[in-house]
Figure (cartoon, rainbow, N blue to C red):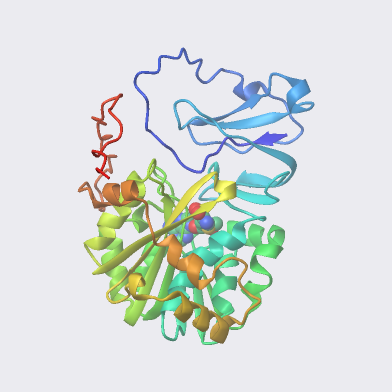
Amino acid sequence: MWLSASRKHQTKYLNSSLKINLVKKPNLLQKIHRPYSLPKLPPDRYYQELPDPELAGDGALVIIDDSDDFDSYVYRLSNVLYQGKTKFQNVLIGDTYNWGRILVLDGAIQSAEDDESLYHEMLVQPAMLAHPKPENVLIVGGGEGATLREVLVHGSVKSATMVDIDREVVELCRKHLVSWHRGAFDDSRVRLVYQDGRKFIEKNHERYDVVIIDIVDMLDNGPAQSLYTKQFYQMLRKRLSPRGIVVIQGLEFSFLDDKEHAALFRTLRTVFSEVHSYRTDIPSFLSSWGFLMASDWFQPHKWKPEQIDRVIKQRLGTEWLDHITGDFLKSTFSLCKETLFMLGLSGPILEDGVEFVLPPDIEDNESPTMKFPILPRKKT
Ligand code: SAM
């Protein structure tokens, strides 16, 4: 069986000069008869039998992500552990050949066994290491329990509250994703709350040192829509202790696909005085992934690699982290010239009740040919 063409996110950078006759959405979909039912997919994703059994294996199936107008990406599954629909989202947990076990919500891969440690270290540790003494931590989302795991390794943590809207997803992760949470849900410092993160922030008046937003992407009408807006961040800021820091999983982020990340960046800047993007490649997402740290005090460019290494050694020892070192972490805040340019552009922010429209692509005015070298040669 194959699953999902899912590049985790959508790129809409179309080359208008390409004229390809696309045969879109062949109507093979629900004709497939299988001994189990397949989870329903969002409108731009659909099932299709692979046409060539030689290539695909007998009865192979792909789920095609049709959110991009040209490309599709597939993960081949060797085993399906769970598929179904909770009150909030479609869930699939399966084993792939290349990435190990994966969790897929509403057709988008959330994390994969083989590289989840990179994603979760990058999401959690920069903010935890930056804070002088994180004691009370709030996680919004984080169903797999791996975000919780990365928080709990800090001995300074007295309480870790995890608020996830979907009890069923958390229970499925607890059962099938043991190497992600490694028992974190049973730690006595943990408080599990099954509630919409927005409602929790509206009603709960505790203060947190570190807040980690690990929710699903801002898919149209998805369950997390209201956790990406200016109004939400304004409330969240009031829940921070004086040296509080927020970190947010910042969607696909490269110089080719940055519009949603940039909108999030601009939105956070209307609320916090220090907002910083960092990024790394997450192999199983097939893309470069962004994260955003927001606070009123933390400036990562003043962080020295030796200082980071020292804090890691003091707080976590030398064995826990698989990926982060001082040098590596510093490098993830260095963005390429074009990314910095895109991030500096003005554009819409995310607000309650306002439909977000992606800004148009920027016209590239560069001439297709040029004279070399670009600067006159120096006389010797
Ligand atoms: N690593 C992921 C990513 O890159 O998208 C996020 C993973 S985590 C599984 C996402 C969690 O967000 C899910 O468990 C889901 O139930 C939760 N979630 C979605 N909407 C939410 C909301 N409004 N409040 C709290 N949790 C929410």
